[in-house]
Image (cartoon, rainbow over all chains, first blue to last red; front, side):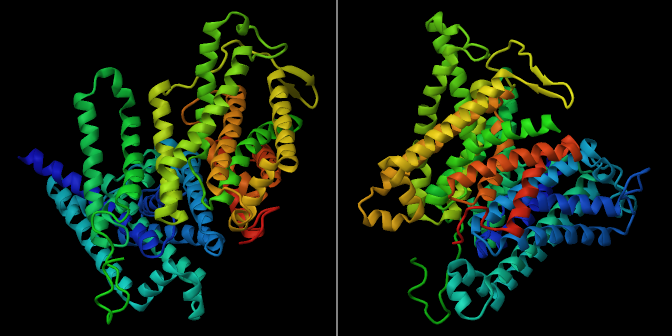
Length: 320
Length: 303
């Protein structure tokens, strides 16, 4: 029983941390129509930023300032934002798929920095020795994991409410206006490039928060944690759930992450020994198939976006 | 330095072949196809398979071409691989992208292309194994052209460059001298106007996929001949291909050739200054620099 509870705590902690990143992506893709092909880069910036700022000092190497936890977390989030700004400034004015290429590239660049810049990121062995906040004070590890899950839930709910408010605000309508018809938005005197950049940076910072929480949970980050597949997993979560719907995004995360963990378990348990080596490939094919088939068969996901044209025109809306 | 220049041109000519198909599709169908690089791997592995098939069928074909490590069976296999890869590209379009073109916008196709690339790459891994292989396990010695500055060259590498050059010239002739070429250029410049003039858009799009796939197969074969075959070679090349297409300007075939050479040279020369571990990030820096300085590339038009 204790085993089951602690496993469920673990499962939900990771799933809900990822759900935060999915919400960030939903702001970019779901509401603004921005293609982010390098989610993992912003996730990584948050994670590495946190541990570099809040971790213990390392001999002869940069980082390890031992800053208080919240400041370090905010630093990581800020780092993601700056990264997004650099990529966004170059691309939000241009052809929309340039952003896809540039973000895909930034993920590769960040991964190669994480692997190689030992003085900064610890290289392939990663950054260890991070002390999780209040861990010594709480004492009992199981209680700590449970409390940590609670913190993650609080963060998720906080981000969810903030995003719902944002999307409902005039700015949120502006986002959808840019997504649906850029020219029309422009004709109303709005600057689509500016709006897109803002949404892109905010979304990236939410991904940074998710990365920071992830690094806190493991008290460790290495290039293994920021493999490119994470981007595709997060994408799959969003479209399965329904892009443009924050509740759908969270539901999609649970479904896809459950499927990922479940398929991994099933492959280890039932696949013949000769196939074990290929378990990863099979799981990747599954993710690829989920993406392609959802786009073809159910492009609006499990919980589709609720579209309203105006609050006064009730009848003509839901059919689209 | 001289060696870096040579390697840069070699890699660049391979990238150019791969980028031509990418830029064509990006221009005609208006979406960045992230699965294009997987066509390179697919072509390289098709060539491996048919090399084995032809080698088993006839003893004569096992003979090597003079000077090279390429056998006659492999040379024939490359032709089959081109056709098969082109057909695969057209089939993928039929199954996935064409439907999405009707249902949704170009960014959804970008999205699906990520999914397609995951599927293709990992199916290759499942079928051929995850380990990297070679067409030929003989050790090929490089000739020393000059000792100072050092320049080592393999006959295969000269062959790759000549092959790339021949194909580019052939492509140039096809595009400027034949009606097929005019059709492609017309559609890539203005699909609507082309249709008004009686060009069959669906057939031309299919043709573009087959052409792009065939060129990708040759590029994949050349890359694998110079390096090795591995299921992840597409993933390693995808960003360089995009960099070549963007530097040259989306839609410009000659831009893609020049862009490929520029990206190849820049990547090779950058390694003199930058540690080799950062090599994957170089195309990204080239892309970012291009987008800041000259967003439409060398020959691209703004749209």
